[in-house]
Image (cartoon, rainbow over all chains, first blue to last red; front, side):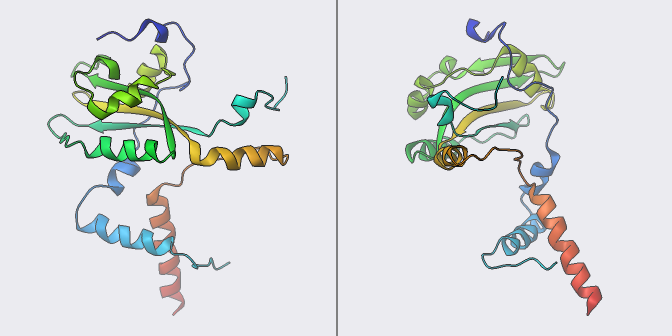
Length: 53
Length: 156
């Protein structure tokens, strides 16, 4: 189906071709490894965790 | 030209984000769960949906866009459709579809983060200027933690 006429001829807001985000796709792929990674991420964002500099 | 936002309506606008969610051919399983969660975000005032498009990319790379209003039986999404602002232009469709695999379908969602608007507005009234923002990929967090753990292990 065609786009509504209001969308044609307007200046866009994205600005450039978008690249596929492979990182996110891998992170949410179900399976043993991502589940383990989820635990790692959860530990990383645990309240009270402090950086060591 | 000035960086100062003087239009009150713009001053109260929250950050606007977009996602393109791809469904590879034969991999979609629509149970209504996505709609339910989106409506929960809308109903709680967390986000305002600005625009939605459904894109299909043929095997030859040609792209077709479908308006939400052109879908039969929108159900609870009818209320969302009625509030859309149709922000995306035809050029944007081509730019967003560049990320899609041939033969796939994708949903494009543009939304305003209403939850962030009051804080952003307060920051501006306090003289603050947004000079950087972004999203940290989960993989980057994993890599950081893994490197941290490796360094700890080496130090033992």
